[in-house]
Image 1 (spheres, rainbow, N blue to C red):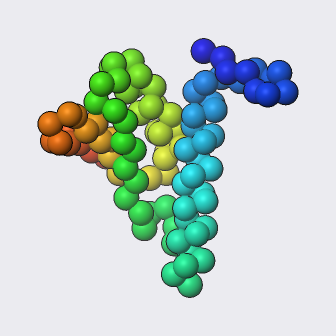
Image 2 (cartoon, rainbow, N blue to C red; image 1 turned 90 degrees about the horizontal axis):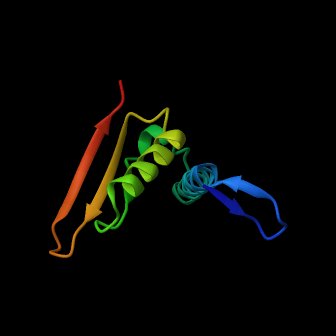
Amino acid sequence: MQIEAANGQRFSAFKVVSMTLRFFRDHALRELSHQCGTIIDNDDVRWVVTVPAIWNEQAKKFMRLAAYEVETETHILSLNFPNNNNNNNKFHFRQT
């Protein structure tokens, strides 16, 4: 799937989502480090990606793969699929 930018350039949707997640991760780490007055690195944070439970399996897999593209150096990534009953279905993946 391709996404067209305002300037007419086309990009892979997967690349756009993974780059967006990477931007938020890097920004959060910079902000945390600034606010805490010490360096916070990726291993100091447990990242959780939350997606709607109503998404189909293909959409959930897309988000999981995009998150893994960003978090290849992270030991734990959690995906959270909240449902309408206020129960959270959490899946934790450990990379080896």
